[in-house]
Length: 142
Image (cartoon, rainbow, N blue to C red; front, side, top):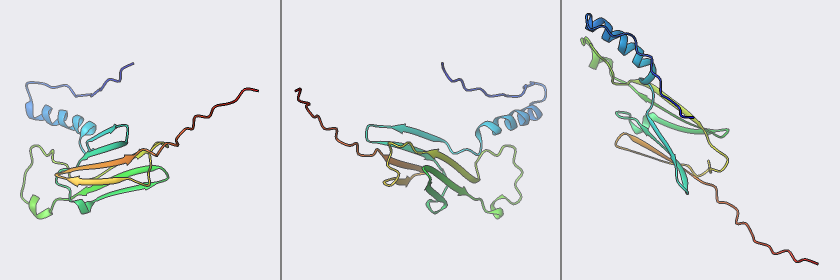
């Protein structure tokens, strides 16, 4: 069974472009804006989370682990003075707070998590737990 992406866009009339465009954008905002874009993937050694946080300062990012749940939160603020006197037609640049949480599977080591922030990308590495070496024991038959 495949998972399908569904977006509910409002009707779009060619006769009243600006009014319909605004309605369409409001429907689209609910689905995509205000969310942190992520890639989550695994290798044989670790699981990785990469988050796009353009314009966010390193000091405004928090990563916490509590009860097996990893939470990434960040805040991007805009100075009030910068926006004074502007009349926006479209405002798509994200500002405000962002937060995402993930349950860490048992096979990952939440004590050894590493994070790096470079050029607007936060990369979190959660290594796998060292597996116990299974001993091959020969059983003698009596």
